[in-house]
Image 1 (spheres, rainbow, N blue to C red):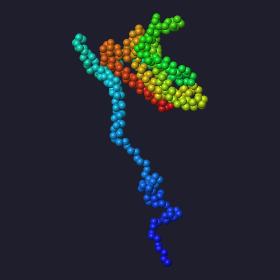
Image 2 (cartoon, rainbow, N blue to C red):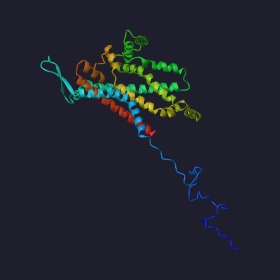
Image 3 (tube, rainbow, N blue to C red):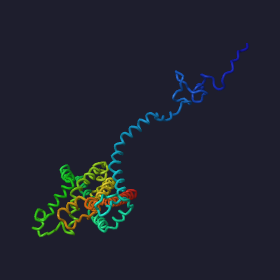
Image 4 (cartoon, rainbow, N blue to C red):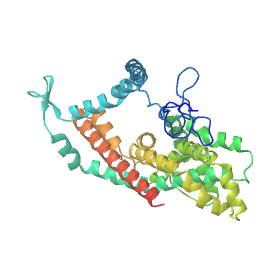
Length: 354
């Protein structure tokens, strides 16, 4: 009897036979399908991760508008209190007021170019003011930065007690306005009125705070009294932000208080050191209030042109030479910008090599 032949099927093992693979598996011709007709997650034809979708143009526009709204007040204030005054000072420094005839006519502004800058740089009093600032910076900046840092490290140490009280006591002088602080210290410097001078005289220590050798230390003392606590708070806040686990690990490794302070704490607050040093340099070049009060308090050493700021003040309000005052102010601003750049580069270079 003849048997019926099977119709020709797909090559390979018969479905259901040992070793057979499903038609939609890993080696099949079509991806494995789910019950609803879509590809399965493990199928060979499963799509890869979807590409990141860009935010709609409307969302980007709304984000940019919000940023513009938030930044607009800053730029308005910055332009009003910084850009416009600097631009006006530069413009004013290019003109000189002259009176016609015998001086009975009205004053007219005449364009003079760089004559005011030449006059300021050629004035010996203006140049000597920068030498006074140089001596002031040499004495004041190390005492300010070093003193504030030492006080902050002392308060941050484990031996410190009553931290809140000492923070308030050291910061409180900064809350006193600069003119009031200078008046207080002028009273304490004046012989016959000051209990400090009387106590020094009774102890056989005679010191004239208004003499040529005592004027600069007197001014430095007033500035230190005003700003030491402020900078100490900045350093102390930076020290408090250090991870305590780092300090505990150093203690477990046998590091003492001095080694922890110099080898761990100081490198970790380098940014605060840079900021305080930069602000101290800029503030030193703006020295004005303390010597002005000393001048009015009877000091013969502090003249009306003792610092560049006092020179500009005298030129503007005593001699009514606003062009010369503006030129001297612009030169002082350029010196401050140059010193700020030098301090920033030096601190960044030290941070890169550390």
